[in-house]
Amino acid sequence: MRVLIVKTSSMGDVIHTLPAITDALGQKKGLIFDWVVEEGFAEIPAWHPGVAEVIPVALRRWRKQPFKTLRSAEWKQFKRRLRKHHYDLVIDAQGLLKSAWLTRFVKAPVAGYDKTSVRESWASWFYQHHYSVDRNQHAVERIRELFAAALGYQKPTTQGEYGLDACQFFGSQSESTNVVFLHGTTRDDKHYPEIYWQQLANKLVADGYRVRIPWSNERELSRAQRIAAGCSQVEVLPRLNIRGVASVLAQASAVVAVDTGLGHLTAALNIPAISLYGPTEPGLVGAYGDNQIHLKACECEFTDISASSMRSVEPQVFEPLLPEILFTQLQKILRIQPRPVS
Image 1 (cartoon, rainbow, N blue to C red):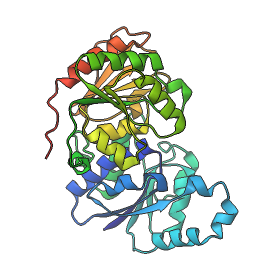
Image 2 (image 1 turned 135 degrees about the vertical axis):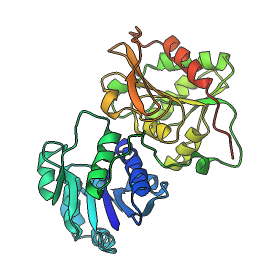
Image 3 (image 1 turned 180 degrees about the vertical axis):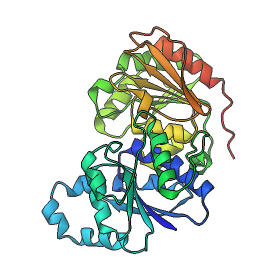
């Protein structure tokens, strides 16, 4: 049975889909998965051993010139790739009009959320098979439940597994003990104050740790340089692609992240992390996996996402969210034995 997944973006949403593939392959024999994904994230599905073919789409770029796109050779090639294989089923795991529209170009029945479960209700009109999935659960669990219903198996009760092997990202040289700061995010109100990053870095360096800081644009580079100013043990990395950042994360002892897609990649690689949330809610879309701590500034509580469940830990007062609080939590997760290099 060959299944086409449509989940185009964003990075976190793409990563949240990986455990559903792991479930399906463990529950049913003979499944082959292909995946339609935004071109900027096309590497990520290919990292999962259960994905046979990745079909990049460029909706973000094409929507700037839609009429020109529909007459272009690139669009025709995309449609040819959609029709290269016979699909027994298409699963729209995104639930948006843009993803549902793409399913029109595949000659196969389409499965998706019903109109009460889907993110955009009109999207469900494109589906032949509709499934009710509780919206009040983590995004990973919603997608796992959708796949189980669409493919006809019982969703496992254990925690979802991303199916990624962090060792595939290790370079020839192993890194010494280090903490990675993921400081970049698209929304200004999700940024952690620079002075707090600097203070946290100083505490870690004084405790014997290196700090490594990736960046993706000139604004983030400037911020990284300011955080690292005056401290030789804080390294501003060169500009890296997604795989390069994955290599850095895979060899980290721990990560501190704002609400960003790379935080979800950290969780997928099974690296202990603290994720910082201000205006956004971690309960439904926070980093999912073992040893993932969520610090929510405005509610003065942190949530520990571990083992096979999500549970609230006794509230602690941390308003504002001071570096001392992060450092205390980091000391706990840094005691976890790092993954051995193989």
